[in-house]
Image 1 (cartoon, rainbow over the protein chains, first blue to last red):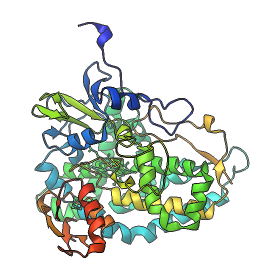
Image 2 (cartoon, rainbow over the protein chains, first blue to last red; image 1 turned 90 degrees about the vertical axis):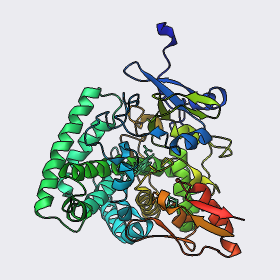
Image 3 (cartoon, each protein chain N blue to C red; image 1 turned 60 degrees about the vertical axis):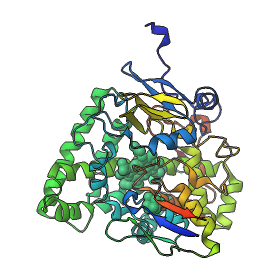
Image 4 (cartoon, rainbow over the protein chains, first blue to last red; image 1 turned 135 degrees about the horizontal axis):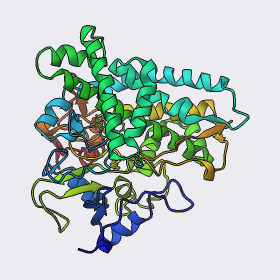
Length: 406
Length: 64
Ligand code: HEM
Ligand code: SF4
């Protein structure tokens, strides 16, 4: 064993000059070593899978486990921390995963989410009204992340779950720590335990007075009938809050910036709002904000495209790489809002864990981007793009802040 | 064209409904896929094949 053979860490820096492109290492890995070793912060390693077909093969194969308690699961440096306690069904396998996921699938199905569209539009319009009144547009600009991108998903999920909106600053701070790549595993665990305490109190309050919302229904239909425990209700709350918040927020920020820098595409979307659906799929593919997984562990020896992954070995999936795979998406580095197969992207993952909130995320993005294009046709960054702080330090890519003016 | 479903595997992601809403729907209780038309007309065939290709849980099987 020599130290010099330690595998390189997960690539994080965008290529110089283009903050919208994924790390250049991925293009090289896809053609030379599509399944290669990646070093994790604690000195361990996992297999990094970079090709589209291999990514779908791994995520679609139940011999790869999402269970963080299985020996060999690559927990070091993972999104949300490696704690295995009350971990939510995202970190479980069937049959438990199926049982728990099905308790909430109806809440996020296409019809239900479509019915929320007017409410999402109303919330968005209110935030835009506030932005129009905001001071500071002349000096330094208004931060679009703070004013719109973060509050929309936060308001929507708080409403669905039945969480008091006044508490959303707690979540913003704690999810920020949970998703940072630069905090230590200990700091991340501390944030996780603080969030757990808060949610524990929230669920207790709702047990006494369950409302007509997701947590209320879980308490009445599943907890009171003995299907799940108090702690499991709290784990649902944690998962739904964390999974849908910064993901959607960062997609909003990055996509708004992309459209500000591409006036031709913006104009096409203004002329023909029916194009927004396809545009959102393409933006999901193009930005691939999930930069630190999904992760799995092999429970048996599995061969992926001739490469043997042994039982007990970890796998890290490179979503941004799969979504720029030139064998699936021709001219992958070009944003093409009419790309015919954009929806084949793996931005929401693949397999049985594919994003539960995807219909909601899509509608939020369609509404927010459509509204920005309509109401703020002259919106532009208030600083040069080199001064925008990009989240190369986070598991979810995006901008920390996005000062805009119009 | 004849469609069959292995609905036990469905994870209710709803992609099929977005792509071919005249052929697929989701059950009210749990979002699991239901077939509105097992032998859809020709103008639906491309959308159905697309849904089968995108379905994350390989639920949708299409014959000819
Ligand atoms: C653009 C925004 C979003 C992106 C890019 C995204 C991405 C993802 C990805 C890649 C996974 C798969 C994880 C894995 O395979 O281990 C996932 C799972 C999940 N997402 Fe999202 N997500 C987004 C928005 C949302 C929203 C709005 C919600 C709603 C609350 C949500 C809830 C979930 C849940 C609960 C899971 C776990 C599903 C399971 O394990 O069965 N996500 N998401
Ligand atoms: S796309 Fe597949 S998994 Fe999703 S709802 Fe349709 S059949 Fe079910």
